[in-house]
Length: 200
Image 1 (spheres, one colour):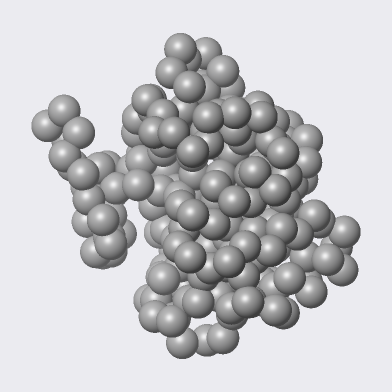
Image 2: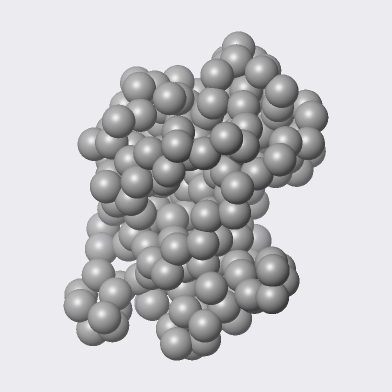
């Protein structure tokens, strides 16, 4: 399975320059994600960028990752155009560049669950209660079969039908690695605490 890292957003709420290159313990956020992907069963890593992130594009190219420039028309439009440009017609893992806690084992677990499911797509979520315990207020929230869940920024989609709405299996995991994506400075501090073992 290929992986597409979505790295073209402005990161305006973080106010620290290009969000994928914001550092956590001296390493850019996107490096945590690409390292986890490289250590996973993923075959090929592609990075979707826009005009908003010229330094991120340069960073990825220096590491010989395939960069796909998108128009910056929004997450879904850019994702679709990147998958079409890469000519991906098989299932593809879509992951945000701001998930520094993600691990290769977790990525492989998600892929394995997807491969066992009949649905063409999979979306990952965390329960709202986990965010409450971490003191986070998530951006978006869904009521799924009576449970409040938060999308986590990792999905698997069928590249062959990327322009169509795909039935997805809602994978709900109580994992901090999926709960904390970096949108604001407080998220960065929370990642530091988790990585130092201050929050278990």
